Length: 232
Length: 218
Ligand SMILES: Nc1nc2c(ncn2[C@@H]2O[C@H](COP(=O)(O)OP(=O)(O)OP(=O)(O)O)[C@@H](O)[C@H]2O)c(=O)[nH]1
Ligand SMILES: [Mg+2]
Image 1 (cartoon, chains in turn cyan, brown):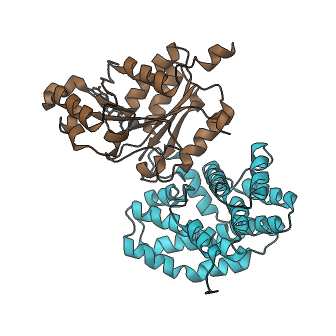
Image 2 (cartoon, chains in turn red, cyan):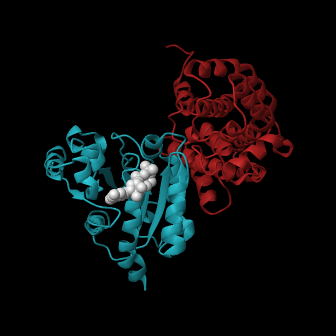
């Protein structure tokens, strides 16, 4: 029996697959509105993703994910709700906030349809139903990966990889990248992704932050766009 | 959860075949019978369809509350949004189900797409596929998952059939053959011709003749 691989690795692949049904393929995270202002090139896309990872997804989403995961491990439901609320209120742009809530809720529904460890999933979903939680995506991902025994750092990988792929997919469909460039960028982003996980996944929730006013403005502009392909 | 499930009609079809206009005809007929509908419109590049239906059906006619006409963007993948990964549409449906449980049905328009579009059964309970005559009378014969699998096939814009040389008899015959006797209805969504038949199919095959919820509760 080969001990290098186990079932959890398959769950990891499953959760990172862009076919995993959470609607991320329909989000551009502000790229669509940026592409209206500026003619974008390949290097702009890596830069756009890198800023997002360092200034937003790392210090806020990844931190919320890490805390949610730990809350499940310690059976500390109150701190799970804190992670949920803290991240929800940090998402200032309505469009982005509701997209995250919708993806998160669908993720929970999907995973609870096949995982054996349902209790915390069920409790969290009940809290959402009763208005005590929202189900924002990174927190839902923390709960789901914990229930699938996926290690915490690898849950971080799913978060960052999913984000990068959704932006890159949007860039492809907006006609900015071709299919090989897409893969090259993912390859290049590996160090940034690893660095962002290491820096942020153990961060206490009280030190969660995000700072990317330019990106916030882009996402607000997206809300106002009349003609658009993407949800965010 | 499933006890709150509101019956849903998925309406698919190629770009410009008349999906939005069909909904604009269906809702007043349903409404006159007392049935209340929510509307979700998947648009490929704009929210124009949702805005148009909100203006027409909600603001002007007052048949639907404005917040019950919702536009959904599809990331340029209209078939994905209703089939492979219907999660965004499901979220919107579930939000409607929890906030507006008095609704009798929800109408979901897919973005205009190719003829292989179908709806995920998790999203829609009744699938209407609408094509128009402008593609020529070969269309039903050429098959495609949408045409073959839908519960109800609509052939729209019959008013312009003579101008594009489409023979409705041929379309009717071929539709019967490829659809294995499932119904096909000819409509003109501009005038409403045939739409009453569509509504009676919805009431019979989706709602199973149930009376409108608000009438029952009063
Ligand atoms: N002559 C004629 N025109 C029609 C009929 N039904 C729709 N149209 C016209 O066809 C055009 C497209 O109708 P829509 O209802 O917007 O079509 P759609 O399928 O919703 O289009 P997309 O959502 O953009 O794919 C409009 O200009 C309508 O006025 C019809 O029965 N006869
Ligand atoms: Mg339309």
